[in-house]
Image (cartoon, rainbow, N blue to C red; front, top):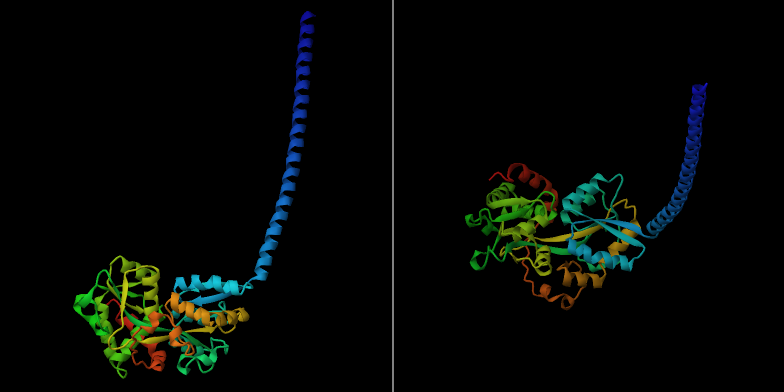
Length: 382
């Protein structure tokens, strides 16, 4: 009997402990659920608040986008020119934001051609006369007669108002002033073929560059307008002395500064920018037989989504003050005939230019054929 009583007491004790433990766990679980619920509610409030703030931010962005319309400009201009113009234009036209896509003139032509059915650019800023003639013939440019149209000689603009020349670009011989001095500096184009300059010449990759395509085409033309083979032979000899074809102008400047080469063929404006603005050891020679002087042009892309913005940019960069500022600070030679010589910076007044006689119509017609032949049969093979 005593044993049964003890057993009953033990069972009652264990059941009491279980009851106490169960009540405690239930209470803890309820507290946890309560805490989780409060946390969830708090997080939901934070999310709602965050969503509100995000909504305000998105609204602000949408408002900014609506207030400022993007003007997309395809350009081959030096980055220093772009950095100079962008804040000035956006200050003068706060309703617009200008976006530059920088590439070679030939790359711009191919891009505009490829986007003909759905244009992504508004304005084409900078390229050879030959490239703009081709674009005009393919109906890629918008007809627009700017307010300054009458200030241009006929040879510096399109008769149908599809493009206008902005600047004149003499193509010259470029050299590293730390490497060449005195009689070591070539005086004319043919001097570049001398064996003493073997592996001293660096050339910006030709096909993407309107400048280089034009220089090479002019070399073919000057040898014999009736027989391009003589010009191709000249380019073979130049190729034999060429150490490297650099990817772009930036790489050309870098390798010239590192003294990986001492000579190149390039345009006067960019050489002056690198020399005077970026303190690079570059000099130039205007060849004795004459320098091809390119008309570097601009145009509105046909079907531009922001036509009014493109017109505003067009008019802005031809403002008289802007033209003189660019001549003084960015070494541009204005194509307009209405700027008195005495108002031009001294460096232009002192410039002794001898122009090469070039048939630009032939260049426009033959450039693609000639450069394709050069790329497939001459480049890197000599």
